[in-house]
Amino acid sequence: MAVWEVKYIQPNKYSRPQMKLNAVRKIVMHYTANPGATANGHYEYFNNLRGTYASAHFFVDKYRKLLIIPLNEVAYHANDVQQYVGGQPYRGVSALLPNANFLSIGIEMCIEKDGTFHPTTVKHAEEVALELCKKYKLDPKEDIVRHYDITHKICPKPWVDSYSGFSNFKNRLSSASKEKAKPRVFPSNVMGMITVLEDDLNVRDNASFESKVLATVDRGDTFKVYDKKNGLYNIGADHWVSAGEAYVEYQENPAYKPEPKVEPKKPQEKEEDDMLEKAVVYNSLADVAIAETLAKKLKTVTVSRYVAEKVQVAKELVVVGGKQDDLKADKFTVLSGKDRFETVAEVDKYMDKL
Ligand SMILES: [Zn+2]
Image (cartoon, rainbow, N blue to C red; front, side):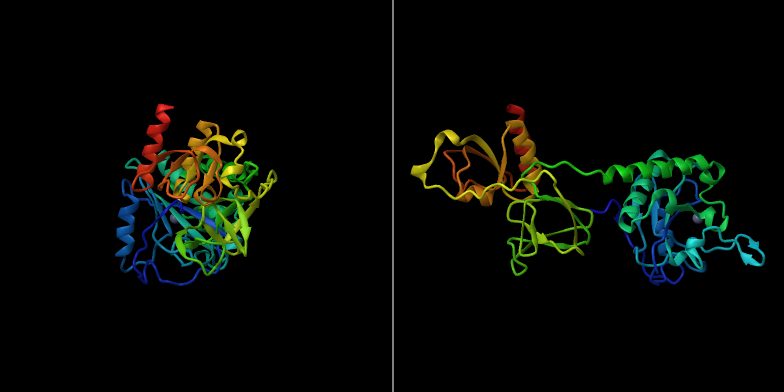
């Protein structure tokens, strides 16, 4: 899920000319120079702009992070002429020559009535810039520049008046991006982890591209991977997504130990003593997180409905989402609501009593 809200302005030759960006080499920071005006106020302004050429991709304030121009389109934010050097317009960032608007993404930060940045506005700008650095493989220290650095416009003024505000911003981004890069530790039954690279990636109900589409997931979403079959990853329960490198980025779990395939036992062969007292069954992807929380509290494991219908894994099943239907157990506790939120509420209630 993207960290920002998408609210595109209408195509408009003055603000959204619908020209394609050639590349994203830098992220350019701006301020609105408009004390007290909000991100949404600027959305309205640029949506109706006439007679002057201006815009930027993002507007952030202490409330919102709005993307108002698609990331593959040009915005008019960083190719102005402030001064001439040897008869040529001053250009301080050579990577953005000849025209920064075709090679960068602009983030406008709103200012408070007193001309300062609200700390939450700065935090919002950080979240947006971090996501962009990940998406375009940019280095926060090298690839985030001020409008001032490109044309010498006094923008963003608080960070031209005081460089430390800007350098602190970049330093925080730099450490945040390194933190994200640390390898994650997963339980041994998890093969690895995927990060989705595209919006609206299909989630299918079987390990086949012909199978039914249950839902879609978005760029930036992450999932644990439990299995791989026919070019699809299993991301829990009967949910499968394409394993194509163009669609998902896969990170292997070094601690992964494949579980031996369990064959369904006939009831008379059931070995009571081996069996877990309790296990938590999750119904769908939406219930996995809360099921794992519950299992941790019960000091037991989670199993998908798919598995729990084939094999009896515990004497008692705590069912998170859905009904007990064809599940195999001696005893059931069903924690289900009519949607995932009600299910979470049921589980919370149950955990309170533990
Ligand atoms: Zn600017």
